[in-house]
Length: 149
View 1 (cartoon, helix red, strand yellow):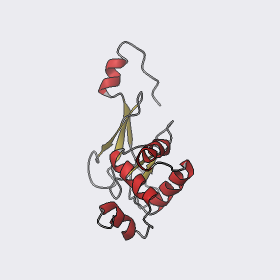
View 2: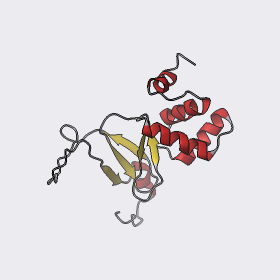
View 3: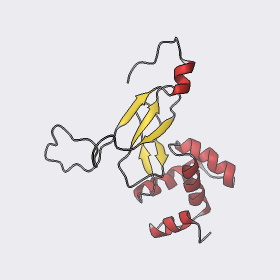
């Protein structure tokens, strides 16, 4: 266990290493953009018993330690990913919620420039691109698409 990179990552961030925390981090590596409920199910498949509250508590700790990023797209439960430390954005299907990471579209961090920064020193931009993935476009062909949010 001590040679595991996730084990070392937790130690480097002063997070006590437990089987539950390792399982959650491994689940996030396999299922980026998962909800807490999806992670709970995956961790249960891997290690057996874990309470939903333990998953929420662990995710809160990992977000606080900047090991996990929490995003909450409009109309969706919070989602979690282990890609941290950069300023990337997301592309989400309106129908199936498939989510992809999108690197900055143009320029340097924060990728976009506010028309008026109101005196702020801006260091991050959060952008979500919405649309329909190819599979949903085919499935929804001829139907009225969902309204734009």
